[in-house]
Amino acid sequence: MTEIRWGILATGGIAHAFTRDLLTAGLQPAAVGSRRLESAQAFADEYGIPRAYGSYEQLVADPDIDIVYVASPHSHHHEHAILALEAGKHVLIEKAVTLDAAEAIAIRDAAQARGLLAMEAMWTRYLPHMRRIHELIDEGVIGEVRTVIADHTQKITSDPDHRLNALELGGGALLDLGIYPVSFAVDILGPATEVRARGRLGETGADTENAIALTHASGAVSSLAVSSRSAGPNVAHVIGTEARIDIDRVWYTPTSFRVTSPDGTVIEEYTSEVEGRGMQFQALYAEALIRAGRTDSDLLPFDESIAIMRTLDDIRGQLGVAYPDRTAGEH
Image (cartoon, rainbow, N blue to C red; front, side, top):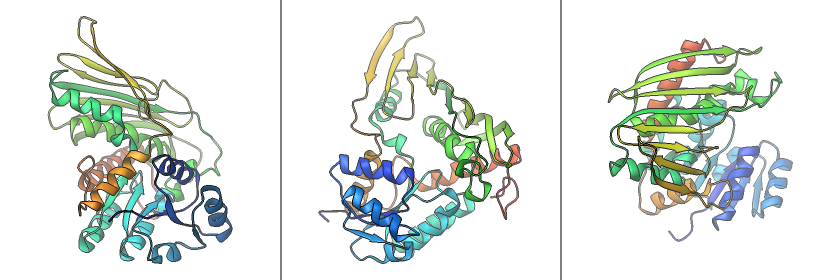
């Protein structure tokens, strides 16, 4: 397969960011779909996409699409990923991959039954500075990793009508922002074995702040802070017995970091030079998997996405957040 042909499902802000980075990497989407043909056509015109569809059903039925990027709200990821898989398309699903673990399991099973790739679009995992951090850990440069500290805190909006505050769309700081530090902690330390969370709910019942403490299988711990109503430093630290890695603002985007020994000696300084936002790396990785006939990511296996969703379900239950037709923390 010489060319992997992308379909873009939905035309919101994240779809724009992803498509811009696809073009940065020299990849060209073949089609875009929206609930309104006018929206799809405007998106297609902006990015030079050959075909625009006024329904997601039409998009996934296009025989010239190999993989669908699911960019709809969390509340619809399950529905739209299954729609694409049933049409024989691979899927790259925007994070958080679903509303809960049960939905993620259904996607995994549907993909496995059809021999198709299902991959969560946690783009941070594929960035060059994150790959270098893993190399340093694997080489033993920082010793035994004992602690991860990270925040994702932004002042976004208190508008109750905004998607971020709409429970029916999976709104709340946890799935939109908290997924980043939780996924990062699991990436570095392994699955969470114990979860403690406290937080604050906004006017609509969606969470606006939460503090999360995780214990991992090795005994290592992570401390994570999340907010959609106040802006913090957005930095992260990986602390080992022989050195620590301090990741600069904004840690989950292409950025710089330093490796520092306990006596203050700087062992390594790293700076990212990435064109665009950096979402192209996950797309290139997905394409490489498809060309190799692979149906799962080495950097974020789908079973790990499910485990992360279970952790988020647990956090949500402790916060008392309940999405429509679900009890708090149901999974």
